[in-house]
Length: 487
Image: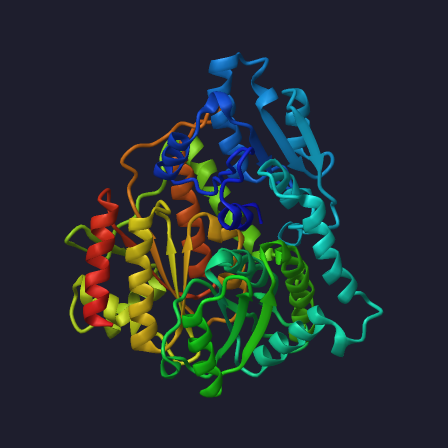
């Protein structure tokens, strides 16, 4: 939520600029640090459980930086903590005399907490009129109240549509958002993917809605019969190109849900509408939309790898299947056997082609990239997903690690086995120490990569890892060129 607000409003005159750090990739942390003046920054540490390793590691890193400027005793005055009562983060913040501790409501899950302190304190700091924002949201709260009949309830009706279409095979929820609110899709992606990728209590099989964000619209013919489009239109700043493209999809027979916002202050209404809709869709799919068991499985795997590193000083080495032109391929035993059988020759392009050939109608192609989220990397990765979408006629997703582990990671592991995964990893040109720990950010990122891969393999997912070395942009460009040629 804070990142959506930041990308929507930018810098409001007279208020601080809000920046969001959500990556353990050392290059990303260095780029973040280069944007700020530590001596003039207020750090907001946000974690419901107070035990999440990423924000706690960032906190340790920047607490050390502020301590060097203001002294260890005064460093905490530059920090605010947002966490549930009694968490380890609460205790840490109290001990280190943080400027303020704001408590979450324990009964509200993290991804449903946009309109609580977790979303609204950063909103207030960056200068948004929070009272007006919540007053607008209250309109949707009342519209979705329990006493409102389902046919008149906007959240329930949206959930009925998504859940019913999902059960009918249209389980790829594709977001089309006006340019002024384009970042909303990333929030919706986490809400839906982490809430619905579960085993159905009624049918005993895994169900889920696959959110598709930031996939530019194409001609109606490139989409399969597994799509539903959600057009969230900003009435005050619409896109005529989007209007025409969505109309063409509708005319071609694709289901389209249209939602209109008068202006960005109505985003609070959408947060609440989609939270109700996601819970309703979960009921129709017969899954629990309020747990995330497979997110925890990846955390457990990563913690096990970190423990081994602290005991031995190294992570277990892995041997690539193939190496060429700066790219190295890795797979577990089962996926390696499948690729070896299908590949026409033993080289990188042939194995990539064999992996993409495993995509079937109704599947989705997921890029999980543990690289920095800069524009150059994003362009190469977006180009890869669009080539696959157009040539294979399937939905595509792009997640940057480790942040996707806390959103689409649940769907990947707990949802239906309809994903074909390409994990992309790299070497870090420069690593950063985490004060108070025996490992660096690069080691933490590496454990998260390997943990995610390990759990996906255990779940018998179709996954291949591509390692691009230290020349990340060059490696991604080579990968994009190969996939463009063979897909």
